[in-house]
Length: 398
Image (cartoon, rainbow, N blue to C red; front, side, top):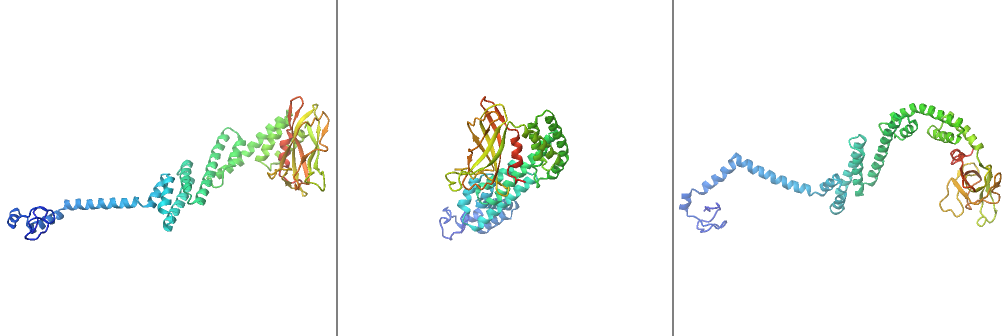
């Protein structure tokens, strides 16, 4: 017997429906209502046979399946990790990795492979100018913060920064060139790196503008020399030789101007050497850097600074390490000398000096006065010192 309310199947003698609890109708009542088993089956079939009803049912099933698939997909830890990386949320990405991915080798490998691809694609996009440096840097720094692919991401960060600096230098160079500032234009063009698309153009610009720069420098240097301002002439030529180190005209001019400055020094070094205080008790009586200084000015020197360069027995430069110096030393040592009281025309230096480390390894020294303070309060900075350093520091003696 079918329930007149829900259509559920019941035994013939049922008074109430075992499914919905409704009172069962007699067969006669059922016949009157037209809700026979046959009619009910036909009614159900008619519902499914209706095109509109089928569309509604199938659409509902599709929506349910999509929702279930979406929930499963977005609850996938790998998917959540990738979404957080793409949104620059490295904190949440790291948390997901540590709690839901770490320990699963397959998932770990999948994540590392994804991050390496992201690093590679980000760098390529920056190289191809699809994204700017700021965007590339943000992506790479997010990946770096996970600590999962340090070698790959650090390499990409370094390469991206180098390329960005190169592009910036090329742009600056173009600006300097427009203002006919050939020196700074060449300096910036020289900073352009080989994997920058501007590299060949930068090389062409350097070659083309070095000629203009040379003409400009020689003209300015001759002007300084004619005014006997050899200090400025030497500074200019020092800079020029750093830009074009093999230019014979620059080298010749620099030598001439430097000789003029050397001849006009107010305070000079007559001699310099390693003074040996004891052959046996060097720990107590260390060897010393010693320079004999002569005052060519008409004033009395109160204090001064003297620069030293050291060389081994073969004439190669060595670092100068002083007594009680734990830094490892440097190729240039500048010694302070106070209350030296060198009168006009007088000398200073015999029996005094700056104590060296016991194992200094120096056989020969060069010295040059860097600057002095006179008793009247005036000062003198040696214009020859810059040239002297450029000529001899960290270079073998010929």
